Image 1 (cartoon, one colour):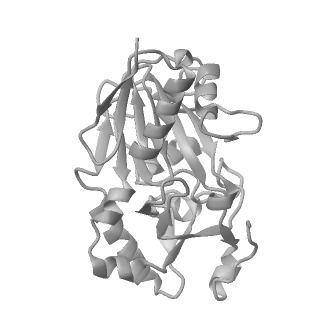
Image 2: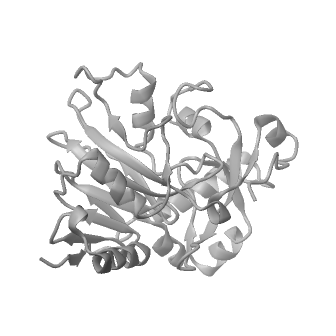
Amino acid sequence: MALTMTSLDRTFGVRITGKRIPDFTDDEWQTVMDAFHDHAALVLPEQFLTADEHIAFAERFGDIEYLRPGEKAIPVSNQHADGKIMTPEEKRYQTLRGNEGWHTDSSYMPLASKASALAAEVVPAEGGETEFADMRAAYDALDAATKAEIADLSAYHSLYKSQAKAGFTFKTGEAYGYHAEGAPLRPLVKVHPVTGRPSLFIGRHAYRIPGMEDADAAALLDRLLTDACQMPRTYRHQWRPGDIVIWDNRCVLHRACPYDYDQPRVMRHVRVAGDPASELALVTTPDELANGFAPARSGA
């Protein structure tokens, strides 16, 4: 059976059906890769991949970013291994709630991610969807004045800051992404290293713009984000067990949608590391930020 690709009827994204991922031929893989670059998000329903198959799928797109030492695939879940549901006081629960804000994965790390592959195992009866937003089309929709305004601007990205804004305070070392306090500096307009298309590189982790008052920077970032994440540039995926979605973090934002947190929601996540040539950023420490935004080190 051949692969079938169906548009999501948005500015981005396709649904791929027809056969299981482990059975893709080399020619079909090339078609999938082309679709990834053209459409930025691929939805593959009811694949029911094992963890090893999930990892092998993601490895087709690049090297894996280890989210825990020695682990390529991790659960994204509000449920403990013993079946108990996490409580609001737990840091992992708070990280999950923070992820309900629009973001791109690992933009707060020195090396931002290239892609994320998320698979559904257990889904709540209602809610718990994942929503995606096309930042290429969002950039294209900007007026000329706004494009000129942001052309040379960059923003710092911090998981500490985004979690604090959501009402959750973290200490160094409490979870993945909280082991360093440096803030990568990333341009607001990112040129895709493969397609050459410009896109907005914003989201909840972006919090400060050099040379701009913090209040003005926050207002600009909030306005850009609100205007960007509108139809037809957004797609909300209603998960079914076995579904897997992979998206391009270089030009797509995503967020988790609320649900009844007394119900389990169990997903499995594999993240593809970015290419250092295009995704490694200058990083500064809080003290350096307070004293003129000088870069602490270069990733190049």
